Image (spheres, rainbow, N blue to C red):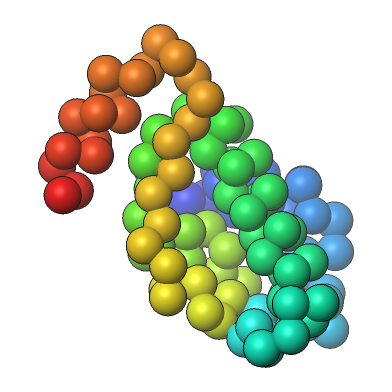
Amino acid sequence: MDYGAVTEFVRCEVPDWGDDVMSAARFKAFSGQRSDWEHKYVFRKELIVKVTRRFGILAVNVAEVKEWLSRGGLTPLCIDHDDLILISSLKDRASQAIKELSKSS
């Protein structure tokens, strides 16, 4: 995986990616209040889905996502609390997705 290409794509998708104040807000941990964390969760989910679609990725692990979303050594907090496997909507790659899932189980 070319992390440089993913990083450039993320910067294009999120114009304020380099802003320190916005990064601090994006990377802070989720609180117990849904209204506080829901928009961060949706932002992360949509960005990850955009990356997987753009690069034709069928399955991804947390370490890869942390690398994609890293900014100056910071990564979003709480992201490693999820077992993260994404399956793309590309129907012609279903058999490859099944193989990847069988390897991970």
